[in-house]
Amino acid sequence: MIELIDVGKVYHASAGDHRALEGVNLRIEDGDIFGIIGESGAGKSTLVRLLNLLERPTEGRIIIDGSDITDYQGRELRELRANIGMIFQNFALFQQRTVLQNVTFPLEVRGGKKEANAKRAHELLRLVSLDDKASRYPSELSGGQQQRVAIARALANEPHYMLCDEATSALDSRTTVQVLDLLAHINAELGVTMVVITHSLDVAKRVCNRIAVIDEGHIVEEGKTADVFANPQSDVTRELLDWGYKRTDTPDGKEEVVRD
Amino acid sequence: MIEFFDKYGALLAQGTIDTLVMSIASCVFAYVIGLPLGIWFAVTTPNGLRPNKAVNTVLGWIINIGRSIPFIILLVAIIPFTRLVVGTSLGVPGAVVPLTVAAAPFVARIVEQSLAEVDKDLIEAAHSFGASNMQIIMKVMLKESLPSLVRGVAITFVNLFGYSAMAGTVGAGGLGDIAIRYGYQRFQGDVMLAAVILCVVLVQVFQTFGDWLARTIDKR
Ligand SMILES: Nc1ncnc2c1ncn2[C@@H]1O[C@H](COP(=O)(O)OP(=O)(O)OP(=O)(O)O)[C@@H](O)[C@H]1O
Ligand SMILES: [Mg+2]
Image (tube, rainbow over all chains, first blue to last red; front, side):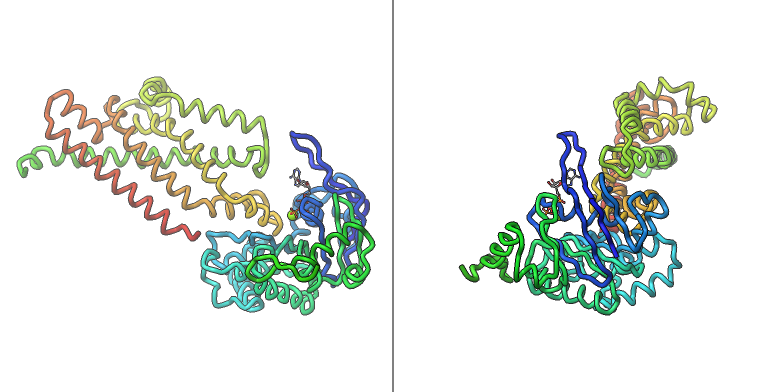
């Protein structure tokens, strides 16, 4: 379980301070696929990056599985991160490593034996149906395949949590569905708790059992996905829903008016 | 033609060997110094792995000063240092020291530039998998920039090849030395031409090989 208690984040920049999050209280239960939606610049990435301390909160505490991780450093921090897989919008695969070597990377950094690492990586590549591409390089794969490799890599250390920052934004809608179904499968079969940032309500609707709506650094609404969609409590959510209802991305990337 | 090679073949062969030894040795030593320096410089930049303004500024000065001293002046200016290191300021060893000193800051700069090209997202991803800074340097930054680093080695080597000709002035030998001694001082244009052609051919060969190697290992 992940708990955020009164979490805030202020970025210090030469141009001045910028408050990205304020008074965030959140609880993500084991087994959740927890969606975070909100407009661009709302603070979604910041929120998720706090969970594995890629960013440090400037206020509040973060509790994971009962331990306060807020001040973790060094070895403790690296152990924590091994337990939290992460995938990215642009996949972030190592270009000079083969698919297999990408998947073994998180194992390598923890010092596993080479053969054991490779064996585990092959298992994971079978899980994402890409074992036949093991010796290829990322540049030889499609976007959807690259994201599946990234998912395999994120699972290498058998994490309990997985963070997905706009993981399907760079993919067309058919590939998006494949990747989302894979994430749902991993959640169901391996029990990995997921935190999924998305700007697509379709994505949220398809996989998330709970969602939080974030606006200008504040959580304005949080609850079961169905409830939030059926009965939005905040103006921001209504606006988002309204927008999503009128205009839906079609497979060829054009926007199409569904109903108005 | 045959007569020419009978007479000067051994001289030109020795010159080629001297030039190669000078260039290769100083290239290796320049990387021994410049590579860690370049990594340190890259890592301490404001958005680097371990930002450190003071260290970064000082390294920047050293590197820039090193690169701005004309080689011919450096060659003479550090003669006492050269003697201290290799016991002589003459011959091939006497040339390798100033060549190394001249090339090391250059190497540091191009290494830093290669490392700066590495996608920030990859470093972030590595962090997210619990990699330490040292692992990120070795397994991500150096690995991902390897083709670019190889191109840097080729450029450095070719530059050193050219600079080693100037080192001829301290009696270091080599093709450049031959070209100057025979062409400029003894007016034997044919020997000079042969030495210059050898230089051109060797530079072409190394540059082409470097480009090919960089292309081959680049999987992007
Ligand atoms: N490193 C940083 N330094 C300064 N400000 C930052 C930094 N990272 C993010 N911000 C600011 O914090 C705010 C929240 O950013 P964040 O990336 O969390 O938004 P987001 O909801 O993920 O947006 P998007 O949907 O565009 O990805 C933005 O105003 C952004 O400009
Ligand atoms: Mg974002």
